[in-house]
Image (cartoon, rainbow over all chains, first blue to last red; front, side, top):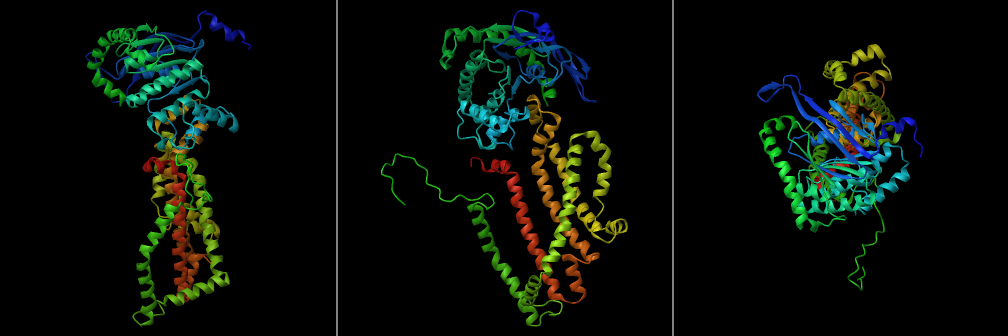
Length: 293
Length: 286
């Protein structure tokens, strides 16, 4: 492997920070004629992120919790290179993110599978747009489909799969390119509780083999603790990082770990950090409804 | 049929013959047969009335010859190859016009559906043209393009292009923003976004527009041939009428009915195939 001087320069910092966010800000401009009332004043701009600083080391599993509408998804979009920050920078491996990074993959709450493609063809898609040959990408897609226990479902269309299966396909699609960074935006929120538990364990099982860097947004405190090395708690809008909580639970983790005292202690801690922000956010609900629309 | 000695084995039945893709599924075939079976009596009554009414002198057999005489004329025209020749010419005109319409409407519709500015610039023009009847324009086509093939192809083009264009625009606009976002997150280029996401999203709408466009093209070419042509099935019908060869006229009309019927069946089958990922949504687990 050879790196030129220009490649090395930004990496001078010794810690292997895969993702570095510096004072990331985002303000949404409303459409002409629309306005909201913020702190008693009328405005056509909504600040969503107000200076997020965050370092995520290589191979870490980080979960992000925060009240509804605190800009967690926007933060993922910025790391993914899908949205430009209004201020500050997001960097992956020391390089500023300006467009979707080829080493980043994104998993959405609503699966976002292409309905006109079969399960296998969906997983092939990112390989296809990268120019991987037909036979090689088919082979690879099949491997990932089997990894998620979906052997025999290659030729099913998404509409013929259950929600849990669709999300498995979506995660397989994300992993098919060997991403360095995996962004997950409440991927299990639309699933029933049992499927959700199963998929959390499946995700951990596979992640422990590949150890890619994961940023996982969730509303569930239990999910945040169960999966994470670190939990990032966001404040209410306009959001900043309120607190980062290291989760020191042994791996591999079993679902029963949730009944342990240690787990419960984390539950209390995360909820303590969140409580105040959630009640702040509730006062902000009318606004949240307006800009989620 | 043999009984398995060990009933715990779960071997699927051996398939001796698998249905080629171009044949309809057995269930849809059964459905079609039962539909024809139920509809047949009404058709037979009409055929019988057609045969008897002129024979019994209820209507003038010069204007309305009995069905058997029409079928005889039809057989004679098939035998002489005259019918195939006229059908071929009509279908060729419709196909060329429709093909040109696809070539124009698809790229234009993708651009108009995707880029708001492009649509604003062209929308008024498209609306004005769309609401002008292709038949009203036939004299214009003839003046500009001459009495030959070009004017006939122009009218079939005009008849189909707006169905395709409008449905392409609607299809492009209906693309799920989440699919666009997912595609962009996977590093899809603009060109691939059109080809691999926007176009497939729009296919159900485009195919529905194509179905209307094909019919419109065919009907328009018939009308154009009746008004100004020396060949084609429309000319055959019109000319037979002028010559008072009413049996041949009805034979031509019957031919059109059959063509329209078959074409519609083919288009419905094509539409079902092009959107089978979507149709399965209604059926749930297959």
